[in-house]
Length: 395
Image 1 (cartoon, rainbow, N blue to C red):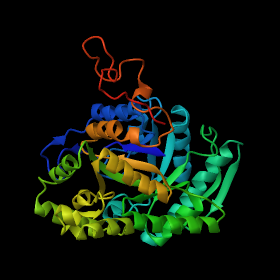
Image 2: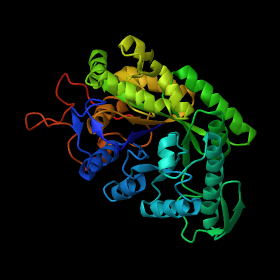
Image 3: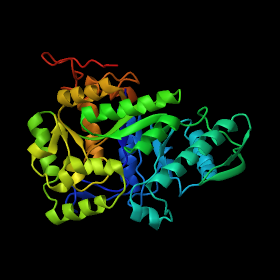
Image 4: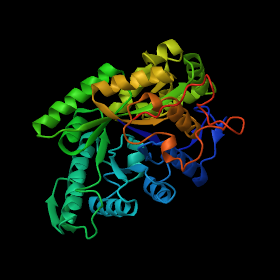
């Protein structure tokens, strides 16, 4: 099981949909979140893409020297990048980070944003272009280890004598992640990517998507790994967690929800449509209506595009829900929470000890020999005071 965190390059806050409790987005803050994720034992971080975000490649590059083991899931955007340039960028980043790059293939679903970036293809055409893009990208990188070149002529993209002189550290290329809910997305995932990511839908729906991608991949003689993108609100008690979930949307105004949902409805993303359906386009507001599956809450999606659901509960409950997804075949969990710095600590401290994470010891693993907790009475290490349970590191 791999657990990733999220770098909030589009902003962060204690309350969604309002400037109240908002946090200034700065490079210092982005570094704090990345360093926390690295030292706490998260496998990597997703860096979002889009016109509302800082550029993911620039941000990720700036975080290489302040982290040690953290991997970076960074987007390539067909139509904005040419595949040969994207291959050079990936190879350079992978070498400079010593093999810490992961690729997030993003086709885009906001037509207004795409047109602003000069992309005027419809949904079907974008997936055709994306399939050609990632095929070229993969071949250029794979052939670079032997000094080969590539000729390719497609409907949307053509290269002649494409060549990469400096190969990536990872062979044959950094792993490719991809998410999408349409039939075209599933076909692309099955044929070309290494890991398919779904947004946080109820387990039964996730199981159906996994089964479809897995069956399509088998037709191509391939296997695909699976991941899920979720928010988390984990506290020491269920009551605290649900109170904080409701507090997160307590300041948002009705007109803000209406405006946000209208913007999401204009997108041609099947995944966004499915997210909106979970809260009926913003008409559901109560906890009873927004808890769409045990401990799966759709409140985040009222004003946030993309991933709109959160696992809410105490540590054991959230760990149990994660295991339910893992039993379906999910092995990568890409998580986030508000504010991202504090929630990274909460999740790691409360949930990591309950998960079968065999990557390394969590929390204490990145420690350079200092105490785990505050020393008691200038004499005792935490966990050795009579009556206090001794902490056992789990792998």
